[in-house]
Length: 143
Image 1 (tube, rainbow, N blue to C red):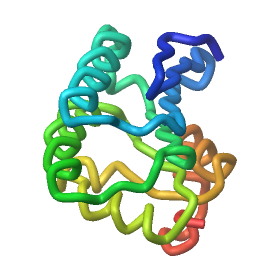
Image 2: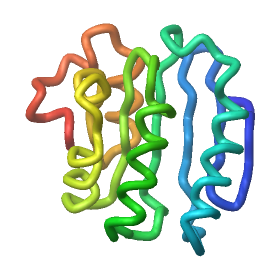
Image 3: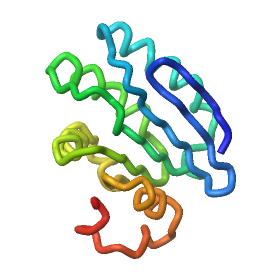
C-alpha cells in the first residue's frame, strides 16, 4: 500500500494490486462543524482523481471518537453521499454494534447495496477483494 493522504483526521492508502482505497479515521475528534467540513473537503481532493468503479473502499472507523449528535450526523450525511459515490464495494470496520447501527442509519440507499459492515479488517478486505464477496452468507459478513 502507498500513502495518498494524511491529516489529523484521516489516513488514506491505496492498494494498487487489489484496487482498494483504505481510509482510516484517526482518534482525533472534530472541534466544530467547520473543522469536520474542512477535513472532508481535503479528503475529497486526495481521492477524487481515481476512477471509483475500478476501486473498492475500506473505511476503518475503529479509532473514531463516538459521536451521534444531530448536527454531526446531518453534516456527515451530506459528505457521505459524495464520498462513497461510485466505489464498486464499500466495507466499514467498526468496534461495536452501536457503530454498525450508526453506519446503517447514515447509509444512502445506493451505497447500502454495495456496502457491508465488519468488526474484522481481514473479513472486510476479503469482501472487497473476492468476486463472491468472500463466499460468506450475508448474515456472517458483518462479523
